[in-house]
Amino acid sequence: MIRRVRAVIRRHLYDAVRNPDRIADMLFWPFLDVVTWGFFGRFLVRGGQASFVAPAQLIAGIILWGAFRAFQRDVAVGFLAEIWSRNITGLFSSPLTFPEYLSGLMLVNLGKLALALGLITLACCVLTGAPEPALVVHLLAPLAVLLLFAAAIGLTVTGLILRFSTRVQTLAYGLAGLLMPLSCVFYPRSALPAPLQAIAVTLPSTAAFESMRELMQGRSPSAALLLRGAAVALLAVLAAAAYFGSVVRAARRSGRLLRLD
Image (cartoon, rainbow, N blue to C red; front, side, top):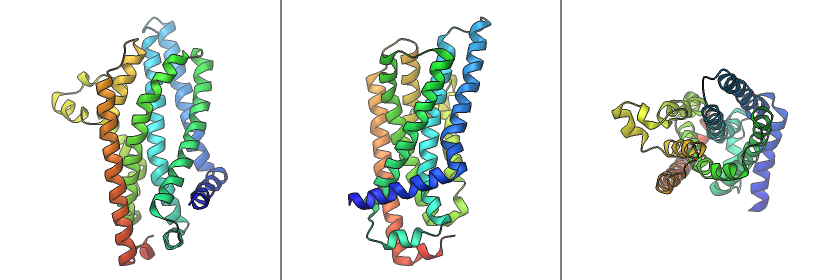
């Protein structure tokens, strides 16, 4: 089992290292976002247009949202890479099991995300000074909720691609973006119209960003809010994994794996 998981990890690491697009998505664009908005935040503070807290919230929101979007995208694009390289048939015809494939895919994407977050943190230290260690530790809880939810979305998109072929592959890049207004990345949930607030409150991503803002404002985040977000995200992951597993089994029986393009 461990050897097969390691093989999945090595396959995606080779693809990431040798593909300039993967490197740009993983390192360059997140770094550029943080630098750009970091300079904008410094401009606001120096111009007296905002306190230090507002730019700090902006940068924290960008970092967490970038992690969420990147992890969701990489889970789905990792599966698309198997289709583009015409490796999907051999992959699921081998002794490799569904949990082993998912384990390898998730682990390699967590490693890539950790590398990107390290670079982004270094950029933040240069722009705004080193953050307080306690604040960084507290932000790990909202980040964990976001990554769980991102995994659920990535698995769902992967299942849809397997079910409907690459006609729906744009969901791998765009589905998370549709959730951005409702996730309240840069503003409180109270800024949304009442009907949208009722939708936003059900999203784990909203709970994560609301908790992040409470932390950045020096308040203790609501434990109930984070626990509810984590519970919903975990249920979403289990449901998405079950859906993906059912689609894989159906594709094996029907021969759809041979017709993916």
